[in-house]
Length: 169
Image (cartoon, rainbow, N blue to C red; front, side, top):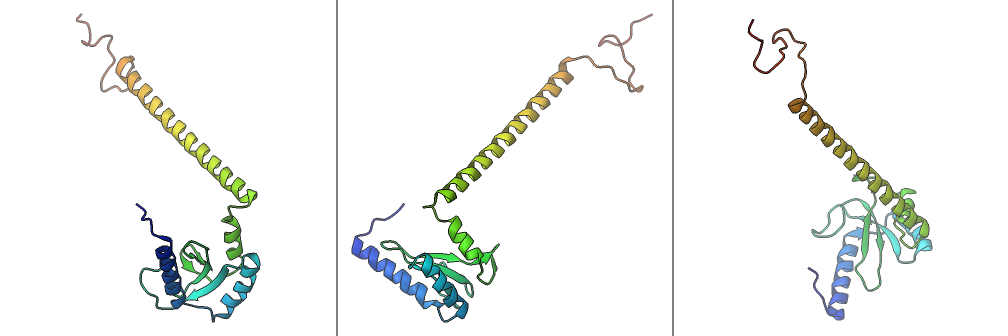
């Protein structure tokens, strides 16, 4: 459940959140400064920082990791951690690839997401069909075992014409 806050209270919360983020990061890292220059050519609200080794609890930061921050007008700051499979990595071109992949204003990105959704839907449908076919084969085997006559090729129990065994001679 979301809580509606008056605009002045929401703005105060956003400022408090942004101040807490900025207290726990450093912009003095040379690599972060270099990336910030390039990021601000893409969008002036983007910048890169490095989180301090000790950070306050409750913030979306990972100690010692690089983060891309975006100031959102009228909304809380966006924090994106730079990592590879949850492991620390130095920032490189993957930062720009990730930003491009998340840009929902470009038709190319939306088409890629839609295509991925279609691939997942086809895979789920194929899996459901395979499971259904397996269930049908299992039921067919059970019905055949219960109602069809079969001849045992095992000599421990010889075959007889009827269920009562051999005819008396």
